[in-house]
Length: 180
Ligand SMILES: [Zn+2]
Image 1 (cartoon, helix red, strand yellow):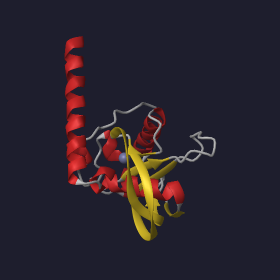
Image 2 (spheres, helix red, strand yellow):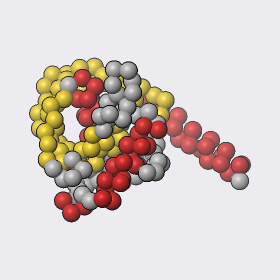
Image 3 (cartoon, rainbow, N blue to C red):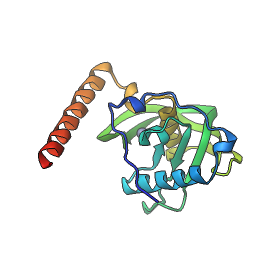
Image 4 (tube, rainbow, N blue to C red):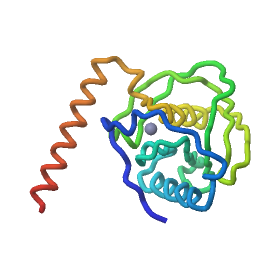
């Protein structure tokens, strides 16, 4: 398994509309990618990761909601070509994202969702979710359509964030250049 590089906002790869996977693409190579994405997510202490966050424009998401004691690894979930088929209610949700590091904001989400998807063996399943899982599913599925949770904030806040991350990126590039 390998840890992958996580794409950070503002990067065009986070803005692409991802394509569905074909049945013949659900093979060992893809399952290795799923394992790598889970490893990457655990290493960065995330609860979900979507393919565009590792630079791939395909409809693939991994999730692992921690247990009560905060530990992960027991509930890995792979969703291929996921779709929200039903939703109910709304709840406030304080969210962060591995692609928008060190930032959280409160937005609104559906309270419960039903999601249809394929697993890593191409088998269709339906998931009724509430609580953190419901929110995580909505957050990750948004990634597949090039949407980020910060899109729900005001234009002013988003522009400030964009400036902040561009500045951080520049600083990182400078530091890398100086280290050479
Ligand atoms: Zn995210």
